[in-house]
Length: 213
Image (tube, rainbow, N blue to C red; front, side, top):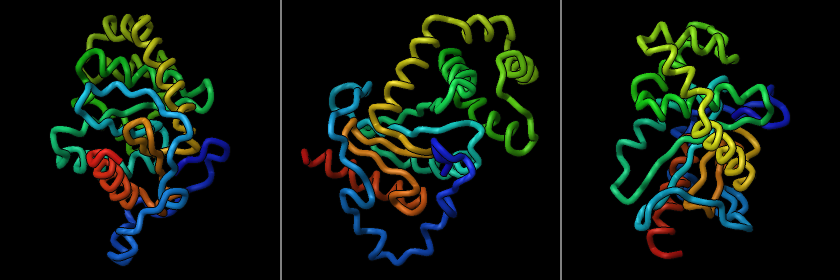
């Protein structure tokens, strides 16, 4: 987990959930494994859906390791669970990558390129941190660079970036990857001890929301 204030800190093994006893994995306590929000955060999911948010940063190695685990978890979710990803910006240098994600979303390219962004950064060691570098890389992926740049600089993407930062603040996100549930609950690798266990906490919280608790 990459911390807001100290990116050199890690939450430990992202995929270490299997090492915990089964009984320990099932004990989820407020204030320990997750935090109830004092004030509800805004949700975008339609009525009848339970929103789950993943907060991430493309440059975060723990987010990169978590991505395939999260993707597998998403595919197992029932119809009443709506998952969305929210890129964070703990400082202004992160904003181009926020714009990158929301541009991919606007162009219908998240499924095709979201994972490739992680691969480019963490495997191919490309520094996709500035707008011009990002646009040049996008062109190598068979995307119209002119259309991408236009969307990247659009008002709609800027609005989504602003809402992402507001949501990050509303959930009081202190590091990534992190998870929010129904605008009411927050958990991350520091609270749950690792991100695989965080998903078990999310499953539990979704169940509580479904029961009207």
